[in-house]
Amino acid sequence: MSAEFARRWLRFTPSLNRMILADLPGAPAGVAGTRANDWLTTWSIARHLAADADLLEETRGIRPGLATLPSAPEVTAELMDAAIDYPAALDALLAPSGRPRTDPASALARRLGTILGLLLATVTIGPEETRRAHGEWPAQHWERWAAVRRIALGGGVLRGRLGVVMTDSASRFLADLASPARLVLVDDPRFLVLRGAAHRIGEGVALDCGGSTIKRAVAHRGRPGDIDTVPAPGRVAAEEVIETIAVSAAPLIATWPGPDPVPLSVAIATYVDPDGQPYADQLGPYAPLGNLDAPAALRAASTRHTDRAVEVLLAHDGASALSGARAEAPDTDAAVVLGTALGSGLA
Image (cartoon, rainbow, N blue to C red; front, top):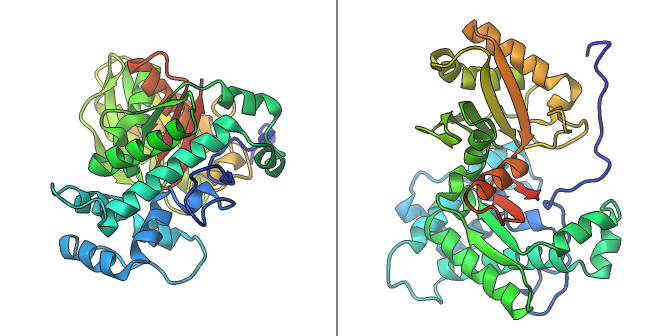
């Protein structure tokens, strides 16, 4: 770490991942008091699907290459890697028309949607016991969530039919509580964050650095062009994380037709300060970036790989998701993204 660089820490934890779900009317049995990421992330959905032996057998019938989950109870990088395809497999089970609402796949999808509704009711209603359990959240943050009226939903978990079923169940749960919050499942939810990264720069190169993959595209007039994906960095040192991001962006930077410096907009699954510097002492594959000057390091690595000057804009993936949602619907108050982890952004 250079003498000029000083680590920065979050004053509070705005993440929804560890939000303790409230005991509200209609909450599914056994859910109140648990954490949101025990249900709504890629790895937790995989565990719930695999816990039903008959459903897992049916899933393997249409996805024979589905990985076996580690048996250890800990949440590890190996679990996250093995779980990547499970939400898509659950979506594939829901795709055939005429499936009864009582079948295990439909029941699991509806239950997950109800829990999503419970999470959003927890933060928008903010029951007193929940506020006490999350003393790190300032009162202003609860007030901001209480004022939310339109919430955009995105992320890879909410693809296809699975996203429709979960959004419908979540909306029903909120309606039963007379909540004023309205949920909107965005078009092509997998790429909401990338659309936000593209919108933030208008012209240049856009990346969505998620927990499992990095999505990339050239941005034109605030929209991503052809999109492809490459693997996320995994659990490695900060310099290797920077190298993975730079190598992912390099082919698009090298061929971008505009003048230097090339604008590079990076949405990243970790919290950053207003200057785009990741905070220290976070979790996930991008946590090591809090230990170095990430924008400067990424700028240098990108130039080294392309011989072009690069201007880096780093943003939290939840904030980028909100930017993408507001580009299509300016009255959007919040965005929530379901993937390897839960991301959120507040207007």
